[in-house]
Image 1 (tube, one colour):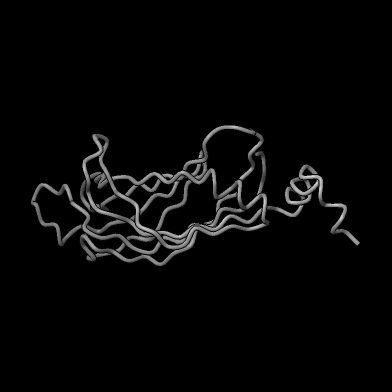
Image 2 (image 1 turned 180 degrees about the horizontal axis):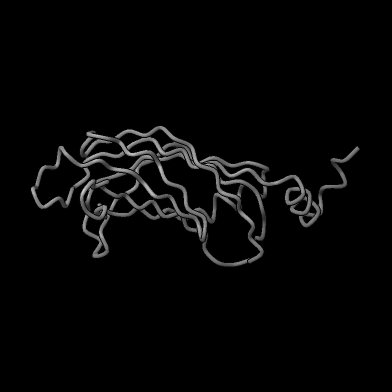
Length: 159
């Protein structure tokens, strides 16, 4: 189903992150998250000195404009360790398929995926902790009207 609207990502926290710092001081990691939907990216604040169990409690919004009737909608959460004197280290990534969330949001006007945990993995799929997020998709009014007309029942509800 094609549609447009706003995807809201509530980044809550992460647990059990594994760091890559050469000194091996896991308590010293300063994690942040790069949230990506297609070409759009948002960056969380750095959870300074919070180590392997950081908390953010931040909300990010993405404009969704999908003309493709098929295809997957994926949200990528890339966890990074902020380093002062070298390049930031990659801690792992979580991938969330939001296709159903968007489709249900188009159908109902808004749809929510309550707070849930997602695995943080490296490229080889090894477990490196978990991240907790909740998601909400709200269809734009124009897209919602179109979805209702396609369904064929919109006229009976209009006054």
